[in-house]
Length: 57
Image 1 (spheres, helix red, strand yellow):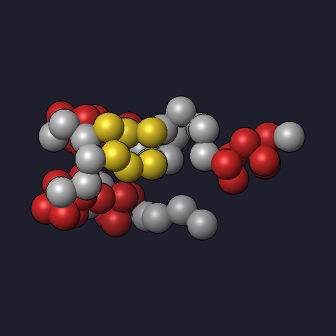
Image 2: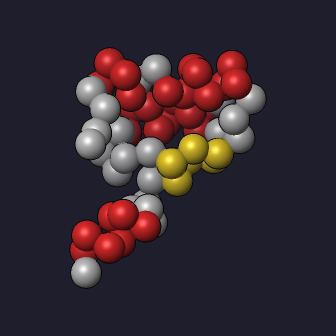
């Protein structure tokens, strides 16, 4: 299940407030991913999610 854009775009803000240092994001959430990176959060968005890897097999 993926989150709608409105929810995804808010993730970096919520992560910053919570003090999160790393987040896993969807491959196609470019704006949210860049916002998070700009805030100093490490974003894992390279498809290395175990569920993505299993689906690709």
